[in-house]
Picture: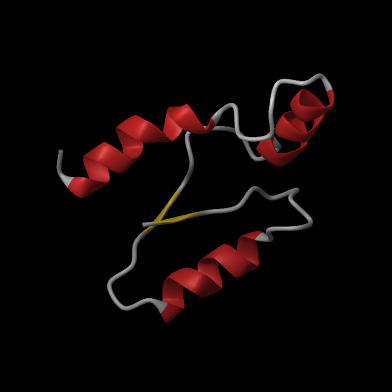
Length: 69
């Protein structure tokens, strides 16, 4: 599973995530469980001391479903 990047993420472009998916045989592309502006939301959260990856626990159900668990 390759997570599709947000439309406004200048550092991790949507085109890059879609190209990565095409390069990996059998890979599936999926939308993450947050909005297209998550990179900016998390960057602002980091500035407040909340951590850049604070929202990543929202991925757990999606990863478990993908893995069949």
